[in-house]
Image 1 (tube, rainbow, N blue to C red):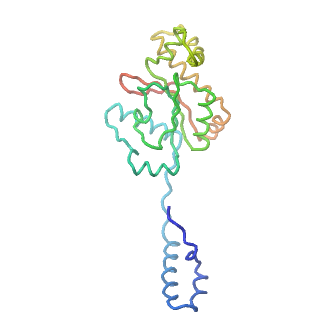
Image 2: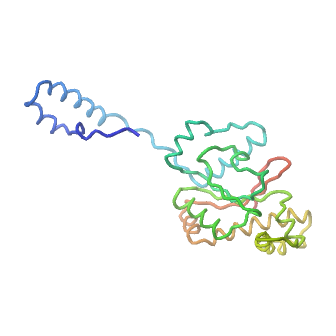
Image 3: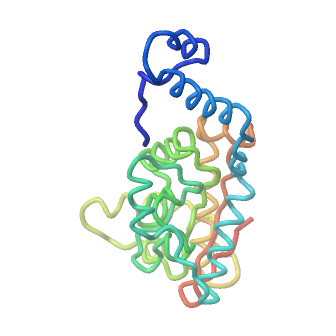
Length: 240
């Protein structure tokens, strides 16, 4: 950030007042006056292109397409970018994903430092804390899209289907997924995949019930979508 120098931040009128009192003031006046004139007549810098929810979603999908095709650009991963975003963040998208180590958002979407606001929890469930975090990411930081990402062979979903007896707080995760397991029963195909997709859509619905997020959606400042990640191919598919 450039430093301001109040002692020379003068209007033309002020400069002319100084003209009769000091040696070399005429030179100073002409020099600064010319600079001011140039500043006034110089064309304005082009405005940064606005990121819309649709553009933000497309950027995520384009990044995943590069990842799948092994054509990653690895953007915004330099030291220069690190220094830049250390001063502040403005992520264009948020991701509510599973804590599974095989689904790192910045890699599968080919993004870098400061691009994504990521919340991760086993089973990609929208707990009050996750919802609050995503509200902050959208309302305060300006994220334009929230993508809930479930994935193939999710262990948390599989455990919820099997009714596994688990210690500690793990059971709270399975309890949150259980309604989606029940709603997906009777569907043809893989039980874990069906339950996983149902769980994603359930969490999307829960996020949309947030007053903060729903108002942003109504104002066309935010979009919330569900997606499914294939562990074998790396492909993200949008769920309807």
